[in-house]
Amino acid sequence: MPKFEYAPAPESRAVVDLQPSYGLFIDGEFADPASGQSFKTVSPSTEEVLAEVAEGDAADVDRAVRAARRAYERVWSQMSGAERGKYLFRIARIMQERSRELAVLETLDNGKPIKESRDVDIPQAAAWFFYYAGWADKLDHAGLGPNPRALGVAGQVIPWNFPLLMLAWKIAPALACGNTVVLKPAETTPLTALLFAEICQQADLPPGVVNIVTGAGATGQAVVEHPDVNKVAFTGSTEVGKRIARAVAGSRKKVTLELGGKGANIVYDDAPIDQAVEGIVTGIFFNQGHVCCAGSRLLVQESIADDVVDRLKRRLATLRVGDPLDKNTDVGAINSAEQLARITALAQVGEDEGAERWSPACDLPGTGFWFAPTVFTGVSNTHRIAQEEVFGPVLSVLTFRTPDEAVAKANNTPYGLSAGIWSDKGSRILWTADRLRAGVVWANTFNKFDPSSPFGGYKESGYGREGGRHGLEAYLAH
Ligand code: TAP
View 1: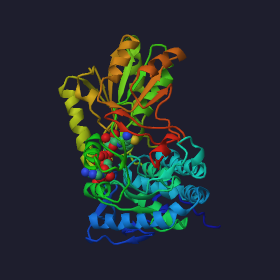
View 2: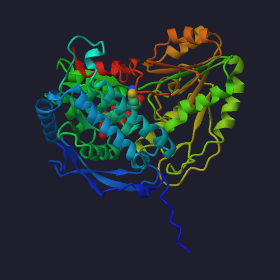
View 3: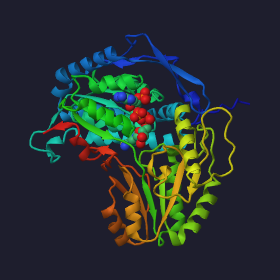
View 4: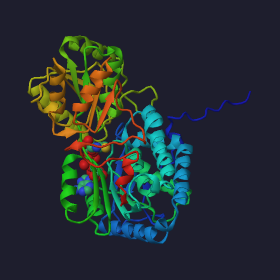
């Protein structure tokens, strides 16, 4: 009888050809860092070392910026938009072809459930390249002035929560507009950016158009402060964003900052409650709550609050927390020991301030970084867990009586990135959305993304928009 051979499942790590060490990607080639230093990237679900990754310093950043400048002047800015678009389409297609590999690598390095990297991160990242590929030859018709032109070299620094997707948000519009790029991925999640570098080679992207310099915060600082960088694009914490704004003040660099958030998810008494409960779960437990636009504050109308919280708890008891490579897993690992410590400390503050803490019964694995889905009830607006970004699977529940009170509470944080509204009445949704100081407002849904839709914040959530036609503006002079 012929032997039956199992094909590797999509979630199997066998689809990834993990190298023991990775260099920097500069001028189309992988290169050793000037210092010879490297750092380890670990799997947050097992604490296993996945690879050694080059630690780029200011000399490497300088090398990368020079390569980007050369490529900008000699090749990329000379090329027609239609030609640039072809490269972006090619990259998008290769990302689709290699999507299993990208999804498994993302899950290994980040800890997020494979069903999220497979169904959200990777398809969305490819979609961003497809979308901006389509803009490359239409910039003159984008309504962005008579003669829109590229800025030059873009320095881009991204966080660890959506490593490949944040890369796509940054690189796709930059290249479509004719800029070249030096990008620094987050220290804890460099691997999909390095696989993306391989994809650039595979797509025959001219050397120097995309450069990836791995390293820690100091490497990011060198990218941002390099005098020959024309544009800085940053996604990360408000604290580092403020530091970057100060560092580039007066330099004539164009800057966009996508920073933290403390999104309100407002549930009115006429909302479809089961649907709202699903939206609350997606809003805060998707990607372990490592989401800048997470619905981390539930604002529920007082008359239905007990019912909503009861149904929410019953739903949370069904979530599977554990091995991110298991396709049945709903909540994966926390990205790093540092992030776990931050979440643990802030949750303790919630308890100390008198809010009531609840988690479903779940067995957390013995190794790796884990935090059970957590709900705080009895939270008031002055509590730190109602004001500060936890960036983890922790929901604060507040109540309100009137729509005016809902809006006042929703707007009462330093942030202004996202919000959700659940109601059966269109007029109530529009009334509320009009009054919320949030860059993105979802109605009867949450955490929905599309490349054609602009994304960005008010107040301490930053400035500038990524996505859609608005996202082109950040990469063009006009
Ligand atoms: P950060 O600590 O701010 O790190 C973001 C990136 O900046 C990382 O690559 C980091 O390097 C680098 N960096 C650190 N110090 C720097 C400096 N002085 N100059 C230049 N770069 C520096 O944030 P995080 O912990 O990675 O991400 C979580 C935060 O990002 C949350 O607050 C979240 O809300 C926010 N976020 C916002 C959005 C949007 S769209 N608004 C999206 C995702 C995340 P290391 O990796 O070595 O630290």
